[in-house]
Image 1 (cartoon, rainbow, N blue to C red):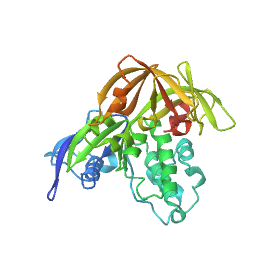
Image 2 (tube, rainbow, N blue to C red):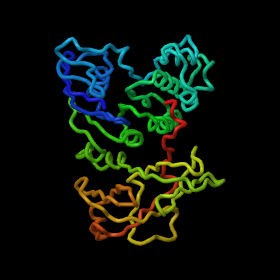
Image 3 (cartoon, one colour):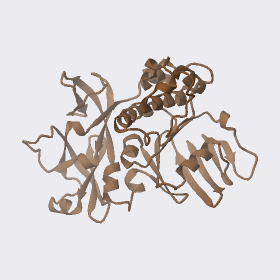
Image 4 (cartoon, rainbow, N blue to C red):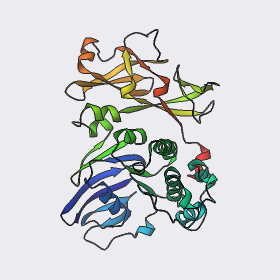
Length: 358
């Protein structure tokens, strides 16, 4: 657990931040100038807090007003920036070895990031997406205790952005360390993070799950950020590229990607892509339907409600218009069907012993 409780002053700009970053990915969101990158600099040790402290698993990294300040090089932090800060006159292998402190990154890191095929290439010949892959491999090569990602997607074109996002979605869940992901994109944040921290004008103003942090931010932002994870096991992979995934005693279909038969996986369900039905529908193009019971309902805006549906051991969030919930006479304990397209799902494998190189 990385714990931050500090103030800092840079010219006329003041930061007041109190937040906890557990193992896993936390999205640090907020408008431009909110202080997100400034907070990362303090965590990394590039700047010192004026008061308060930073600690990792109880060990003090910095304490304002005292001489306690762990140097940058001793904090074992991996960093990935918006721009690829690599040595242009050196090869990919040379740049990654810097992160490994002169050693070599594990085969698992090189393979997972796709850098195993780039090692001999000069950095000057890399595309934007390839450069970000190298930055991530370099950051992981030193076996960091904390990983900081400062808008790593914002400078990429659409195709590269999608490739790097898929890479992060595959790699980050395998890390058992605090990961702080700075972004302006609510969808990217929800796709990669399990917790949100929101900053405004230098202050941490909210932290927690997506809907808690985005309260009052408008329905569009909530729809872009709210999703649920359901765990299952791949029952089969068809030649067509669809995987049949068992969720309890029910089965759904999703794009197979890199998953294999018998593998335990998590499936992301976006609230905006889910339809509630009181009976099992017929004649729809959407191929998936999960039966569950309404476990709770609450307003998430002036005209929108969040419906929590219990599917086996999983809670799935669905956003519906309040008028729709009223017309359907939805109530707690009612059986409902969740309807969704296979193409709307994202599937990733769970951490296995083979991921020990991370």
